[in-house]
Image 1 (cartoon, rainbow, N blue to C red):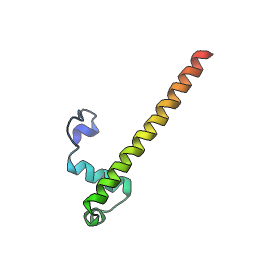
Image 2: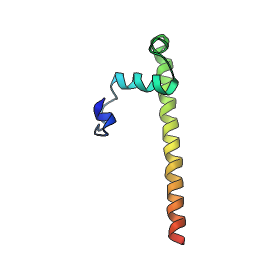
Image 3: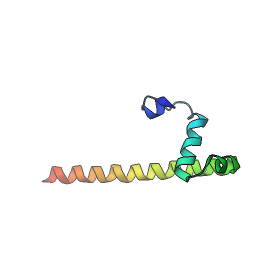
Image 4: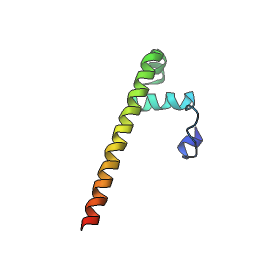
Length: 75
């Protein structure tokens, strides 16, 4: 998990289960008990949804950055 936080993890392998648990608990605001009670298929769906949401947010950020750079070059 330290390599993920330090941004040295290559991402070529799936994230460790502890990281997945941490993300679900943090982003979904679940307690440990709630996480344990949640069916695995629901956990996977939530994790997939969080990933799609993060990708869309990154795309919006990248687009805004490109637009700002293009605007500053025109000046």
